[in-house]
Image (tube, rainbow, N blue to C red; front, side, top):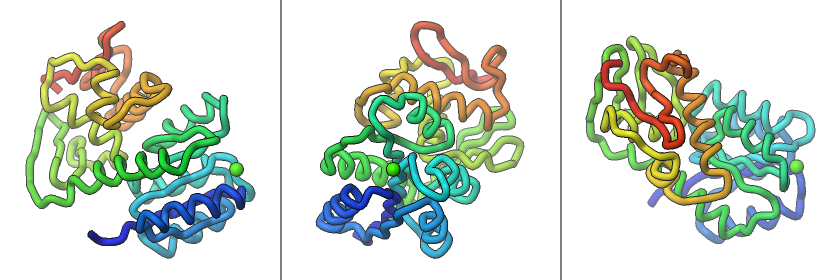
Length: 230
Ligand code: CA
């Protein structure tokens, strides 16, 4: 298998060094960056398969780094956040991060999550063409793209997967737990709010009004459902 390139953005040297050592031992090619500016510079020079991004950074904040990267790329991003900063974690997901880890975290858990995200984003390497079409909305499964009236919605890996799971079976209600399981592939703290954040992003991109959704309905107390009529 091809070597995976990871951009690690962390200003605390001890954490940065430990994570670099761990990732290298696992066979990853790691580019460390100590602040937001260095991160954006590295991002402009290389193609990365995944980004591990600390939220609290000097020069350019993790939030701004995430926002800038998301304007150009749907590369998987794992946010690192300080303990207890729930709002920060949610903010990270709303900016388009795919996952987050709360400090202090074990390097082993970080590796496990990196592998899950890489598996998800590389499933689409398989050159299959599979299209789902509902009204103006078209899902290009092989191409990993969602188009609305022909326009690419630029979904992140998690958003696309979530939309695909829902749209495969229109009318079927999925609980948040099921969506966590199918989309994120494992269970972790704050899962409901993670799914809710991704749904919120998806609706914004689809131009879906949560009060009168055209595509994704909320089933109160249960979860979400894709509306077939589009
Ligand atoms: Ca920091």
